[in-house]
Image 1 (spheres, rainbow, N blue to C red):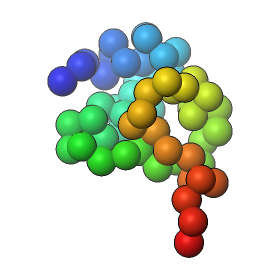
Image 2 (cartoon, helix red, strand yellow):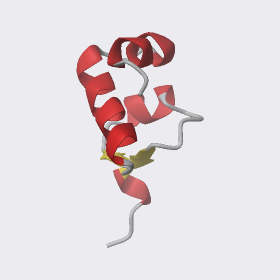
Image 3 (cartoon, rainbow, N blue to C red):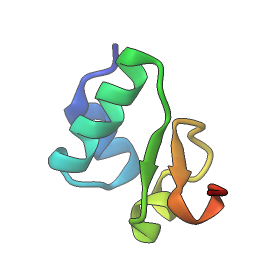
Image 4 (cartoon, one colour):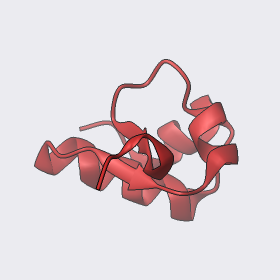
Length: 56
């Protein structure tokens, strides 16, 4: 598992947000978020999914 501080540094996100990214990676589930700024920063990382992309 990649350390949350490395994720925060690599994607220029807060440690708080990086903890959620690390958790999603560890459990193998996507990170669904409405935070469009974070989605843009995590571009290229397959773990983050925009809430807008989901169909209900």
